[in-house]
Image 1 (cartoon, rainbow, N blue to C red):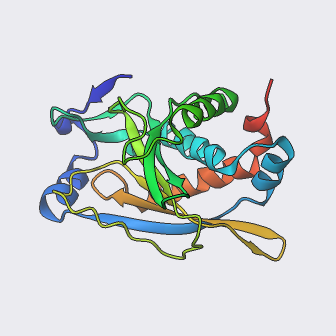
Image 2 (cartoon, one colour; image 1 turned 60 degrees about the horizontal axis):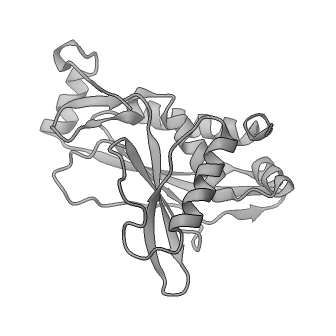
Length: 219
């Protein structure tokens, strides 16, 4: 885990960053459906849960692009993490509350899935906003609203508008003819991510869903 400071005066994105952070502070949300037909079939065949598989997909794409790992650190420096791990919500059905858990990311899915299962076993029944302590600074948020197949979702973060990391919200998947669609909403900060980067993220997530047999292969 290493934070790499960005020298703004040497950064090609400097004028865009300064405009959307200092002059017109701007975040935006995008919601799109992902075709998970092949992914869901493969997961059911292997007896793997969708939620951790999708968390792994998202984290893998995030770790492929600096734009999705750029943020301010605890000292207020702008930079990016070498790698990031997901911090995700879990639901407690008995009292309808949720908690946040983080799991260490590993590129091989089987290793990450074992981390997820271990964390769920140890912290899955822990109540409160934070179920697993000692969350490292190189995490980003993922949540799920599995009761609604939304077509749009806007997350209003009322702070100084300096949270630069993407925020992911997963919806309920629906069946349309022979296709299964999963809505995914992402909140972006325009200072570090343009529409091109948003499109790239959805495109690469769809590729991972279509080629799930490759990364789901287990030794």
